Image (cartoon, rainbow, N blue to C red; front, side):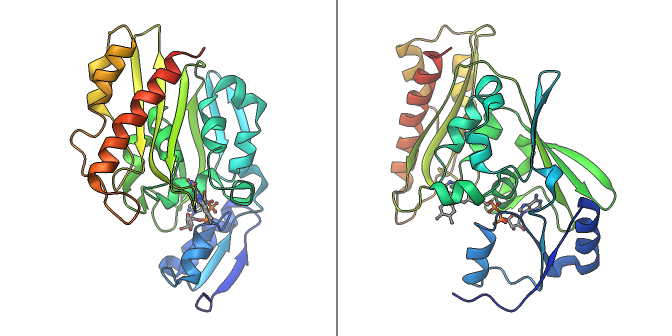
Length: 281
Ligand SMILES: Cc1cc2nc3c(=O)[nH]c(=O)nc-3n(C[C@H](O)[C@H](O)[C@H](O)COP(=O)(O)OP(=O)(O)OC[C@H]3O[C@@H](n4cnc5c(N)ncnc54)[C@H](O)[C@@H]3O)c2cc1C
């Protein structure tokens, strides 16, 4: 439980952090809240020679709204999001998700950016990011680029952020109150065995459903969404559509849940999330 030896550098600005990453190449790792990187280093699953701490770059920790879009700095903690009045008003799915992450210590230190870059298949944020069609702003040596959520979560523990790059912000649209996040959690850690984020657009008669914990990466439940496109939501239409929540997916199997149980939970949680979202607002 003791990490391999490493050098620690604290960056004061984004440019300084990018310069340090360019200088040290693949030997360097970014440190944000440390709640995934430090455990990985202690287990020696990750052995960076240099740790670049971006945790005190103040302008990466913010929540703001402009022209129907909300920008969330990558260093914004789960607790910042859980307790944000702006988000409670303008994007209530995010505080709902944040409140279900880990425990108080994890929520106080862990950041939305670190969680998304880490891309743990059992983490909470990817379901919401997919359901909201979030956009990820990534800074690198050649400038900055934007990646849509559907391309951001690449594989197990792999996101679109490459070595030498830093995720700076996440952009989500202002949404109505007809949203919900439900989670079947692993009791000891709080990580998701199956969790679903639902966004219901009553005016357009459409739904967006993001599922995490079930497969190697979070996904949009396309079969559920197409079944409900243009359809009046009712207990019956939701129940039928929710049966498609694991269609085309290879569910994970581990000591916590078999493939079959995860697929079943995906359907059950999708039904619950859609019923809850449809009843709100
Ligand atoms: C006991 C415990 C319980 C937990 N329970 C849950 C849970 O229920 N649900 C859940 O979703 N998560 C859970 N977590 C994980 C937690 O949410 C972490 O905070 C999160 O996964 C990582 O965020 P961090 O800021 O700590 O990132 P770090 O650990 O600092 O970094 C994680 C990875 O992302 C990289 N990175 C970080 N920020 C950036 C950036 N801006 N740009 C580029 N790369 C970056 C790092 O180099 C590292 O590879 C739990 C963790 C613990 C220890």
